[in-house]
Length: 387
Image (cartoon, rainbow, N blue to C red; front, side, top):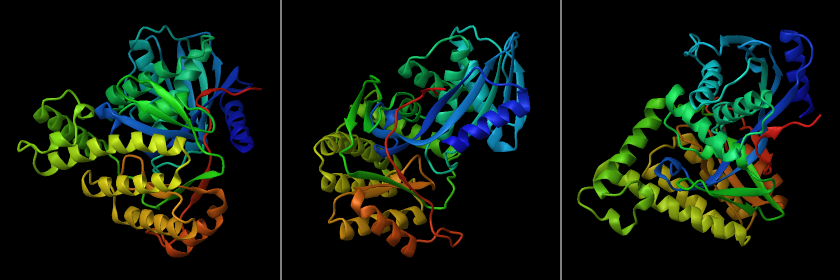
């Protein structure tokens, strides 16, 4: 992270002169299993990974917030906390920063002006939660100006609210909570209704491998919000508050047909898979994990219809290589909201070199290149950066 911190401090000094008062970080996440279940009050099993957003902050004596995005050509944004915070004319990253700050104010926080410099190394369009990481980091930075360290669950919910209400993406809470509350060397089993979390240690010798399909996600608000609306319609037809409350037996209902039935079937079965995956991971049963990951991908492909052909090809390639080279100990599936992005795989560390070599040999992105591959480990959630 030395290069990331150097870019951050250099960008801060070039824009605002001098040094910051402090630096905070918020990691990206990869979801091991449990897709599109969070906004249905279900279960998910993500972990934070060693790519992140960092923000250098310095308190100001006035109510102005100035922000520089070092990864976007040092673009600047500025606004006054004493006035209503509106959408930026340019949109983009500015709206995520404004969204988080506007949400904190709306919830009663009296914030102070600040200079903020932002850097990050989370690949955009890969489904690794760069937006959630940015929101959580902004919350940490603005509260650090007040001398506070936020509660992980509360800041995650505020970040979700920011994205739902200001940005307009009706996401669940998984991404933000994984970024805010993850535990090093563990996956985080999240009950998205109660917001209770349980750290499940990732067995020693297990690698988390993230392979980018080369298909930049087309996860625009319309696709995502439509899936959410279909799930809400299915819950209404079944007479339950959320699909979390439905069972497989309840799906045999003449009121459910076509897409509505398919969406409900994915969510109900995916929730079951997440709970089984938590048990399998805790028991170091990578073969069971592999089966559950394959079933999850098939469900996202056939019932939820959020995969694309190149992602299907990549997931199948990775899964087949793990079956052959790792004796079936592990598996692969699409990760993230869908419509492109990355595949996540679990496997024994000793099999990583052979499996990744096989993927680079067999799979080509739409541009004809070998895929970008990250061998990751689970890291802790957001907080201040020492020193």
